[in-house]
Image 1 (spheres, rainbow, N blue to C red):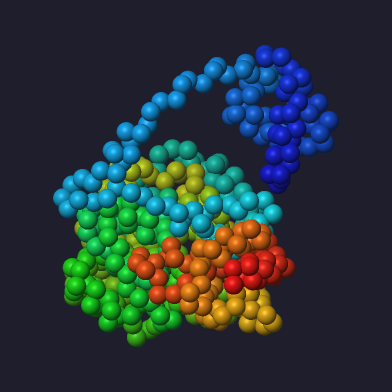
Image 2: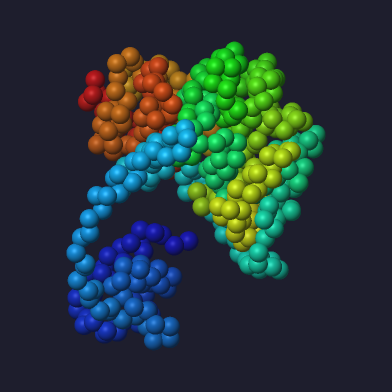
Length: 483
């Protein structure tokens, strides 16, 4: 495996050496660079590709790499101030603001600066990803007959069937014909909300909820309306009241290992949620992002809401990304009835289809013996990390003075820490970054004013328990700074 840091180091070294060559002059051959810098040929190739992308080097097949001609003088700056008026204009009826705020998504998606411990992200650490199995799956997928051709618009039949079994469970209540392959869970949620609600419409969301979903709703011109969640999931009586008050026809929820609270929808609430939606003629968008992030002590998991819904009330989202790699953008939408055709139409208009090599690689991965071993490894590692973070939060000096002990979920990749009244979660997150640890402030997880300040602490991106504990030590330093 190539180390990205070695590529960056070689790129920086070659960039500094370019002044020795005249424009058009040939650089040393790849073999000479390999020997001089003691790196692999692949590292040399990738470093030259970076310099070529920067316009500093020109590569010619069979001839080598040459210093590029200096760039022409940049054109004079234009006047883009007119865009402020155009982009802020409200159009349509009802009038819908055209603003998009991705800050809550970026807080958990962007990689932290070098040297900063990541307790903010939503993806597994590289050491927990099945990178060898992914590489092998992608290599096998590329050799499959027709792998580089055009796939069916709905997705490969075998992959749709696999997702149908996963979503429907042993009862087989979901069929392959009711599954649409999408480019990751975020894309699936975006397709679902655009299919189910027109611009300006209210959409009910759990409070708190995933910031990326709030960003999707607002980008589509929808109005997120919060419905409070407790440790047993969404409160059905408040959902019923919100459906009546708003006339909304969409409710988005995460019944299993909810992000960010970790709650699991209680068994007695599940039929009430479905009944409330059916009575209102509303759809339930079930974001089942964490089913494959169950911890080793989770026990039997409840079935999906989709598996218990014969009437097409539930539009289900299932993804492989969280448990594999950020770049394994393969997910599924499951729906029955006329709504499936609308979901399919929107995806075709937006992106045609998910690239076939990626679908083939996903099939290879989930069908390999390594898949089950990977899931067990992740389950054990997430349990160990959860326990280590909980112990650090409850033993010894408090990481954040006055914070309440968090709920201990048995799935997912994070803990939801409620801060004392009056605390500033944004200020604490900023202080934490200065102390060398990235955490996610809680306010972007709320569609309206938060009832209390929070932090979301993710234990998946760190390299291991020692780094997690060091991150919490740095957070303790930040907490003392803003006290």
